Length: 144
Ligand SMILES: [Zn+2]
Image (cartoon, rainbow, N blue to C red; front, side):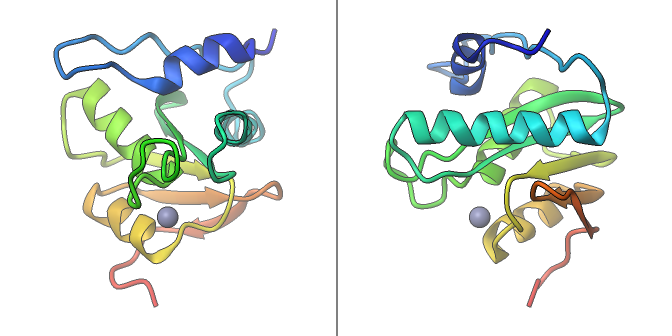
C-alpha cells in the first residue's frame, strides 16, 4: 500500500527542534528507482498543498529512504529551502552525520546549481531527477 498523504505530511515536516526525534519515514512498497522518484513527487505534491514551490526530493541509502525534502522557500520563508537541500538536512539529521557518502538523491527536477553543490558537499554519490528518472551522475562542483 502506498502511504497516505497525512503520514507524509508528518514525516516531511521534520522535528520542531533539534532535540525532537524525527517521525519514522514510511518506506515505499517496492524499493526501486520508480518508487523512490514517486516518493519525491509525493513530496512535490505536499509542497504544492502547502502553497510552496512544486519541488520535492528524497535521499536513499542502501535501498531505504533516509531523508525527505519538501520545498519550503515560500512557507518558511527561506530562499535556500529547496526540496533537495531540505532532504539533505533531513537525512543528515536522521543519520547523525554530515557525510552522506553512498546515498542517492531523487529529485522532481534537475537540481539547481545550489542544490547540486550541496549534494557535492554532502558527498552524495548520485543524482536522479524527473519523471523519466534521468541519471544526473555524481554531483559536481562547480556545476556549470
Ligand atoms: Zn535547488
